[in-house]
Length: 150
Image (cartoon, rainbow, N blue to C red; front, side):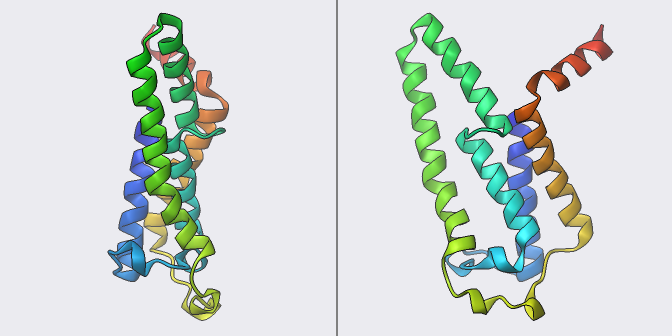
């Protein structure tokens, strides 16, 4: 569930960026965080979740996986989890950095701020917020599901 909310947020963001700007290349997205703050903010949250940074859902997942691997002394699983974290940081962090901290801020003015349609932005923001809620209250959702299943 944690991975699903994070990943769907990233896909929603990619769709919103394309619909609003017709851009496909990361190299064209310098400063896009100024033009699409909700979309790129949600992208940043989902990226942190995929990397496994607190307080988002991906941290909880990686924490339990790392603890389980340590308990049984499974070194290959630990290596895979750490490699996954490094790789995720390696390809998500540059996109977020480029969107918010690189490029000309003046390129995106109030006149050309162009988020995707509200029908696209609301679901991606909600998915990002759910990812944060899953990170802060991880047992709430599993207990809720458990009550419905019992």
